[in-house]
Amino acid sequence: MMSLSIAAWVAALVVAVWPLIALRRWTRLHQGRETLRAWGPAVVIPAHAAVAFLWLWMFFDLPWTFYILGSFAGRLWIIPARLALALLLILIPGGLVILDAAWLRLHPMGAQWTLGRIWGAAALIFISSFVMGAVVPSYILFIAFLAPLLLFTVVAWLFLTAWWVVSHPLPE
Image 1 (cartoon, one colour):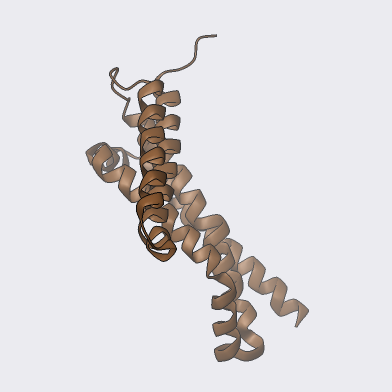
Image 2 (spheres, helix red, strand yellow; image 1 turned 30 degrees about the horizontal axis):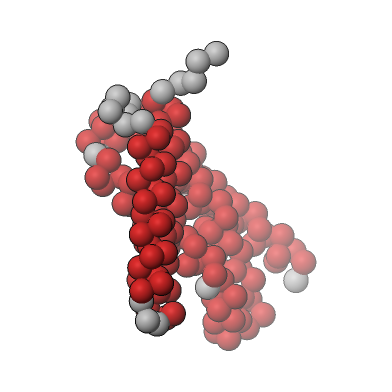
């Protein structure tokens, strides 16, 4: 059983790292750069937030996934479990970092975007979300509707801050 576990880890690492290597090569090719240039901020930022939201959902559903794998696969549940862990901990975050870094290099942020405006907009969304949460009569409605908005706001705020830092290098 130990050799099966080691083989599952090796296979999971290969399955998770190989697409990242291919993705990195693709972002450096002319075709990849042209494709990334065609993606506008209105597509990239919501897609990035959606992937981060789905990643978080997968992370919290991992015990349930392991339970289902154990029910169906018996003692061999460890093989797909390692693949799920590699997907969750290596492939998705690595893909986001590689694509984001390549996209940020190709798209400089406009001069009208300032760090104060980005942080101010995020603060206004946070404050309005908490005010709406105080008005909403049900805690379940608050979680169902406003929690995804807050998560999206955090991811978009982090992404926009990183974009500003890449586009506006700090003076030395």
